[in-house]
Structure formats: structure tokens, C-alpha cells
Amino acid sequence: MLSTPKTVYLKLVQAASSESLPEQILSSGWQLKAISSWKERREFYDTMEWQAFEKEVVIVKKKRALFLADLNTGHEKASLPFPGSPCSFFSDNLPSCSFKTELSSLSDIRAFIKLCAIDAIITSYRILDDNEKTIAILTSESLCLAGRENPETFAHLFSLSPFKGYEDDMELIKKSLLCNDDNVCSIVDFRELFKLILNAAGRNAKDYSSKIKLELDADAPVHESARRLLQFTFSVMRANEEGIKKNIDSEFLHDYRVAIRRTRSVLKQLKGVFDAQESEYYLNLFRELGKRTNELRDSDVYLLRQATYFDYLPRFLQPSLQLFFNDIAASRRRLHQKFCRYLASSEYKSFLEEWYSFTTEQSIPDPRLSPNASLSTRDMALDTINKAWKKVIRHGRQVSHETTDRELHALRIDCKKLRYLLEFFSSIFPQKSVVPVIRQLKELQENLGDFVDFSVQLHFLHERLTAIPNGKEENLLAASMGGLMATLFQKQEEARRTFHKTFSAFDDKKTSQLFHDLLTSIIT
Image: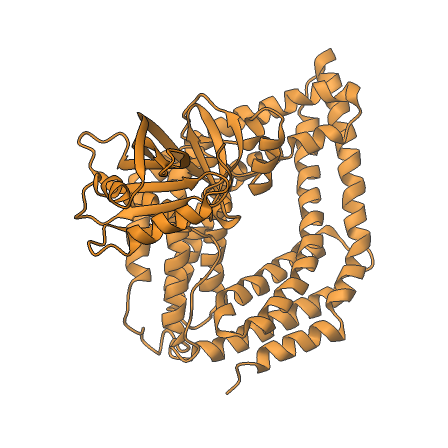
């Protein structure tokens, strides 16, 4: 039987015939015996953020099943019957099994989207030795993109899969092929093969990330660096529009909103880099754009937390809470349609054109209107990060023992501003200095985020509760919402009680030293 030794993949050079390699094997003293030929459709999936690829997994649908393959070897380690051919799917919608568990470990919130589809014309052969014993399987594949009117083959491939005990013979076959004067083929691994398929479909692995990965020049004028940051956030917005329109998953809107907030942060925090009037004009436009998405995002958050909310309640109150989520889902559909109409509007298209022109303007602005535009990126980073950090410390120390909602909400905004600055300028600092600082800040942000989220949820539920009419079914819903609010209130109070402890851990000598090391690491 076939063993699991590593399969060898061979790619023919463009000028070679697909018959070249079988002929070479025959001329080298082995025999070939054809087994069968067939055509196979293969569809590849991953999330928008390439989470499977990041974990070195390839998700492929073929033969009416989904397979998880090792990116390095091509070895298929799990499969599940999957008769459909959707444009996207969630792991949550699959039946409970080990395959679902493994897929969910890659992503339990993002949809797996079809990257591309190919058709493979396959012929398999047995390779026989002098004793006519089968020592391996040779598989010939001609690949072309699926769904094309006149598909052209973009690759001829052969794979050699040795039987157990015949690995040495495979080495001899491989050497005879690679050492041939005609250079008929070259060896490729499964990762290269996967990238070859993606490139043929016009895709590149990891061609999207919402994380800022710009390499800024510390000595460049900050105006130039700020433009690059704005171009990046603009590209993230545009990349997520289609996913929002198609309603693929909630993270498209989330990334879109984060890009808006980062854009506003660049315009607001890097003072004197752009014309003040222009900055204010675009700040208002992006503020209004963000507002258009607020209710839609709130609906997404509640629907994502549906299972958690049910778990907060005793079983006899859970069914009536479904009415609440049915209402949220219906409201979300209306909000989604409304926002999609805006994305397709001439108003939005004009805004995009105007903003694109602004972000691609190369000339340094008038120094009278933008006095800091010519400052080095280094100087602006040091100044803004230092001020933002001191503001977080100052405001955090001023939070009263009562820790009011307003105080913690304001401090959360201060922390976000500092986090954005650290992300904007991270590439000009040594990673060993910036990573620990962001890690320390993240813990404080999580505490404040929990508190504010619980506060917003309680306010929203209270508004819904007061609007519920009288009736038997409605009374049960009111009881469910009341029970949910009681649990959320307890969790909010827990976050409130832990704030001072969390902030004290941030406002200590260790964090102070981390910021000192960060800010002195690039002083020339």
C-alpha cells in the first residue's frame, strides 16, 4: 500500500511536452503502466486574512469533500463530506466533528472564502521495476483555471509517490530526471505549487492584512510618512467594501471602521502636518462616514454574542430571548441594505475620488498652513507618543474611586490614541522596544474595553426593555432581558473593581522604563 513518505512534485518547463516525463522514466529502465484518467475540480478556501495559510494549512474542496492539507507536504490530514460549492462558509455551520474543531481553530469568526477554482486533467501510472513490482505511483496533471470559456493550461505537473520500502528507487528516478540535459522539469514543493495556483488566478498569498506593516523612514518628512499611512488606511477601506456588500462576515465592516478611526487619528493627532482647514474638513467627512456604520456594527456585535447571552440565562428564560435576536437580525438586514445603497451612491464615489487625490498629493504643503510638515518622522513620533503616554498616565491617576462611566470611557479613548500612534510609528523603533510597550498597553485597553462594552450593552438593553409592550410573550422577553441585564451589570462592576489594579500595573516603574527605553532608542 502507499506510504506517507513525502511526495515529490515536478513542474515541466514551458517548452516541454506533457509526455516528456513519462518517456524519460521509460528510457531510464523502469516501466510505466497506465491506471486511469479523469478530470477533477479543485476549489481553494481561506479567510480574508489568510488564517489557514498562516497556520500552514491549505483548505481544498474536491471529490465532494473538504480536505485540510499540510502546506509544506500536501499531506491531507483531515476531510469531511461537503457536496456544495459555496462562495464562502463558516466552520460553525459544519456538523460537529474533529474536522470542524480543527477548522474552527483556524478561525471561528471569519468566513472561509473561495480563493480560486481549477480543473485538473489527471492520468495516473504505476512505476514498475525489473521484476514488474510496483514501486511508486506517478500522477500527471494539467492545470487550468475553472469557469473560463477557453481555458489555457498554466502548468504541467507530475507527482511521484513512493511505496513503502522503495524510497531509494525514487531518489534514483528523481536524479535521472533532474540531471537530464534537456532540463525537462524542476522540483517544487507543495507550498510553491499552491502559490503557483494562486498566481495563475491573479492572487498572492497574504495579499491582505489590516495590520500596519509599512516601513517608514525615520528621517523622512513626517508629511511623507503621514501620506503613506493615509494611503494604507484607504486601501484597507477599499479592500473591505466588497465583503461588506456581499455580507460575507462581520469582520469586513469591523476592519473598515478601524481604517476610518486610524485615518481620523492621523489627521487629528499629527497636528500641523496638514492644512488645519483641510484636516477639519476631512475629519468631519470621516466622522459622518463612521456614524453611518455605528448601528450596523452594534447589531453585528449583539448577534456575535448571541450564544454567550443565552448561556448567561437559565434554560427556561432562553427561548424568549430569541425574540430579541430575531428583532436585531431583522433590523440589521435593513441597516445593511441602507449602508450598501450609500456605498453605491454617487456621493460616496465622489468622496473616494476626492480623498484619493488628497492622499496622493506629493508636494509639501505651504509651511504657513502646515508648520510641522517638514519635521522628521522621528521627531513627530517622539513628540506625539510622549504626550499621549503622559496624558494616559495623568488621566488614569485622576480617575476617582467611584470610577464613573464617563471617566473610564474618556480614558479608553486616550489609550486608543496612544495605541494608534505606537502602531503608526512602530517600524522606526526597534521591535524589542515597541512590542513590550504595546503588550503592556493592551491589558489596560482590554479592561477598559470590557467596561465600556458592558455599559453600552446595558444602555441598549434598557432602551429595548422600556419599549416592550404588555403581553404574555412580551413579559417573558422582558424577564429574559432583565436577567441578561443583571448579569451584564455584575460583569461591568467586576471590570470597574479591577480597573485600579490594572491601571496600577500599567502605571509602574517597569512600564515607565519601557516607554523611556522606547523613546530613547531612536534619539540621534
